[in-house]
Image 1 (spheres, protein in one colour):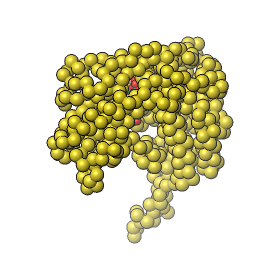
Image 2: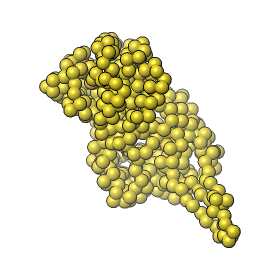
Image 3: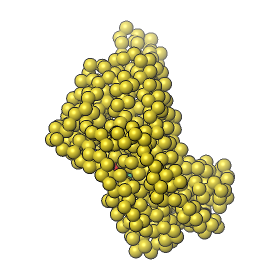
Image 4: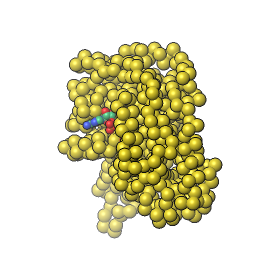
Length: 495
Ligand code: NAD
């Protein structure tokens, strides 16, 4: 496997000291403990990171609370905040390659995927920087006026306060910033708990926050484990809102814990997204679209199109086409741009996906391509396509979070829609057809927060992103995204 040397800044960051970022300063963990971070492409330990626990979370929350109560951020003129956020976007743009390379080392993703993700961070920051100067409430006086009552009534929109954000490992900087950008635009203070497997890009970004001019205490970053640091953030009485991205199982635990203090909660959770292919679909568009819908980032994407439903006449051709496409995807280190499939995030995740591959075979599914882990130091698995599956199989029902596609032949539109919606999740869905009416009629019947037609996986700050059913609560991006970090106040003035 060809390997390119990361740039000096990347190496200096990865090999450097990784401490907790609180009040724009670096601190050791109160316990003095650190944890190891591995490069999933090689299995090697690449960094030791301060391990935040309840005491450190408390320190970070207090810092965020002070910053909020002293109005260090939301008290600034909107134009000034907008300029700082725009500057932050430019700093991400300046350091895009460095951040992307850190992600490759920390997460294993292909460099092109990492660069796309950093690009989306820049886009999101600029989008929300622009929104800051357009925020405002409503004047409701005319609506409530009567012959006898004279009243001036208006709403003001305010930041929700101190926000705890909890981040997964599969898109570290992208998921952190899809939360931070609207939270900062709304005027909140934030404590970030990155995933224990991938804290390095968040810690790099801390320096950019300082350079951009974000005041002390507004953004705090405390790496640590879910059961300790994450749980402490959810339980903390001074946290007003939790914005979580991760598994549905953890999301449910968070809701239960947050109920104690009735925190506001938004959740971006797991998925088992369907991709529907009609007989009239264009194979040139469908085959690469459906293949990369599942195999991008080695299937470690929340909205990965992991269940394929093809109308019967085209079924064999489409499954064979996707399988051939999968065979052509080169597996290897993310720094080699010729590699399309990186490693899974960890040994544990590789073993979990391997067990699903065995389960599929035991359940009677047919392996059309792939089906094995790759014998290597890193945590690689072949892109896999299963046929002959039925709706009760575990590989069809459960989120595998690896490069595994299950394919089913289906009759007509009713059948396709029923099969696609037969899941507890509702994050994404794909439709391939050349019939525009059929495309819209099908989209309307799918229970999914995001539907892609003749393509897969587009996200944009102007388009809300989120899930139906057990894929989450609320939406990120667009106006919905900032609403998640705001409270509305109604003010009545008796005249
Ligand atoms: P996870 O739920 O195991 O962990 C996510 C984060 O939660 C980590 O930071 C972890 O430390 C923390 N955590 C764990 N237990 C906690 C607790 N009790 N209290 C507070 N925090 C806790 O998920 P993961 O394995 O890191 O990520 C993969 C999952 O994330 C998949 O299910 C994937 O679909 C989902 N995901 C969803 C989206 C989306 O936008 N819907 C995006 C990316 C990933």
